[in-house]
Image (cartoon, rainbow, N blue to C red):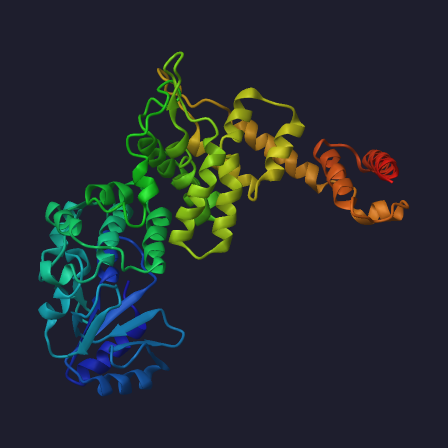
Length: 459
């Protein structure tokens, strides 16, 4: 996993009396056998101006701020940094005073990092591994452990990073780190940084539930994920949900959904749907007086504003909000259809209402209920895939459009959208275009006849 540009830099740095190391996630991922596209190097023992001259001799350097000592080269996936000291000046992730110091040594440079597994350094030229804080042992044990109590608590984002790394790598978080995180306030974080960590957990982890389980153990769901925390302890009907409360169900759904991320239109939105689909149960769950059965009638619609508030807190992406508002009310319909096998026009209408029809099928596979006493999911995913193909074939056939109605002599008017909606219903029912045109024109004549009659009575 050596990088040729990094080696060129390292040779020039060595000639100038310095030393260059691969650092951070690049070294961690190499030891884990994970290919990493982003390469980070740290240059020790030469002045910033000398480093900049070296970079100019190799390519076109781009600076993230010379005072930060961070550079890259145009066209390269390579970050080049100098050792620095950091001192917190506020509560936010970026509230730091930074002092570049090329001569502080590898131990002091590594100590400012968050976790031992991210503090590993490898000499670019010799391959010597520098491990001041037991990072290799923690990697082999599968443990996320912070380095320094004082510096760790200065950056609240590290709480989410601990949970995110645990989810991505299937690691445990050291009990001392969990205890330290309990006392860190996350309210000053920006939504952009929170979204970044959530994305990594939802899109890179085989079991994204670990991210939330770790935050739960830290008592850190409340600031950014309060609705998810509210799912804890909400009962469900054990006939359909023998797994337990809504929290447990949601954690299982996001883990199953992770297996379908490469099949959907927007993986992040899809995973958000898996996370928020049952938030309506917070306000609708009740126990029937007659038989004591637990129900959550209407949770699929009552959950929409709750889910929307959650998503808007996490991201500025309007598409994500639109996706969630559209898909949450539909989330139960696929499995109901798979169980009841309704007519084709019914599933056509269901898919037509969805922003992402295909995603609806894969979500159903993640959300399928389990009947108590069995190991099998209810419903029939193959049926849904067949109906999806049928819907796509239906939508590919010729259909009645506005231009067809105008060509047939129908004048546009205020009721034109209603007439087109009728034509669309016929399309979803599988009616051939010629027949649908005749039926739509007849519908339009009757509609306008009633309008004229009604207007006449008003006069």
